[in-house]
Amino acid sequence: MMIYDLEEIEELGIFDGINEIIATTENKLGAFNAAPLGLIRRGDVLSVRLFAGSHTYENIMSKGKFVANVSHDPMLFVETALNDIPEDKFVERDGELTLKEAEAWALFKCEPKNLDIALPEVEFVKGEVLEREFRAVNRGINLVVEAAVAATRYVALKSDLYLEEIFRIRRIVGRCGGPREIEAMDRLDELIERFD
Ligand SMILES: Cc1cc2nc3c(=O)[nH]c(=O)nc-3n(C[C@H](O)[C@H](O)[C@H](O)COP(=O)(O)O)c2cc1C
Image (tube, rainbow, N blue to C red):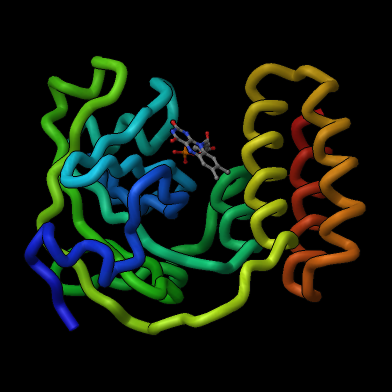
């Protein structure tokens, strides 16, 4: 089901607050990129906070657009935060670069000249619901996402405080998560070690 109206954005799973999505973008040469990104929604206003230097920043700067992929796969958050995913994980839908396993996707436009301000607004263009997911809240997956945030900060700032946070999180994921969450935490450890 395609959606073009901002009034219907909740159909795509995008609600008020910060929506942790996987942004897919292309660079000038056509290389694909995927990385977690917080899509901020306050009513009808959507914005992002992009740290300069990432591929996502560079690609949005040059193309003026990105696709927000909605996913509940903890492994996808870990892999795209700290690593690259293979090209066969991407697929073109309605002319846009999306992730094969997305539950929904939404295309946003962004004025490149606005990217340097603190919270540049982005404009919803269109989106599609692919799979309706209904599930209870699980502390495990939310904590894997939290650990992935701590890991990207650790890689950037190298403070051991982030490692301690990840260590605390791992115990709870072991208790509350399913096999996919536990596998994702193991992978997170492996990827962090690569940066040490
Ligand atoms: C859940 C989550 C949310 C994130 N949100 C943002 C964000 O809003 N803005 C940002 O610049 N980086 C954010 N990051 C960090 C980037 O995903 C990370 O720096 C990534 O390595 C960038 O990859 P890239 O160079 O391929 O774009 C987030 C990471 C995670 C795990």
